[in-house]
Length: 79
Image (tube, rainbow, N blue to C red; front, side, top):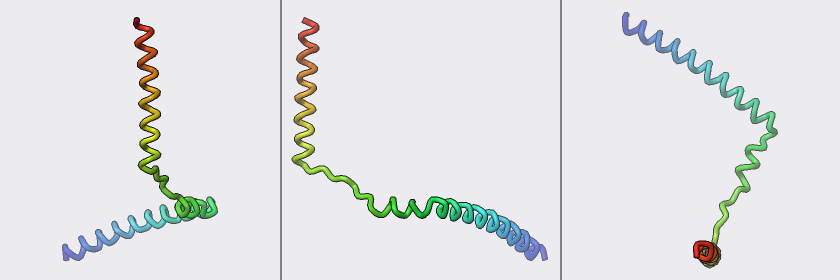
């Protein structure tokens, strides 16, 4: 009979957890309804931006040119 009592206690504990989870779920559903399902619309059309190799190379080249200019000016300031 001890096993039966342990099973009943576990059942009550799980029923309590289920009640808490259902309460949280209803809160999340209410929030989603209040937002007018805007969360669904945000996730659908989002695409990752891709940079081509040529575009990346151009950015690297420009950055190197800017840093060379900075170094040149710093060298002049020291001299």
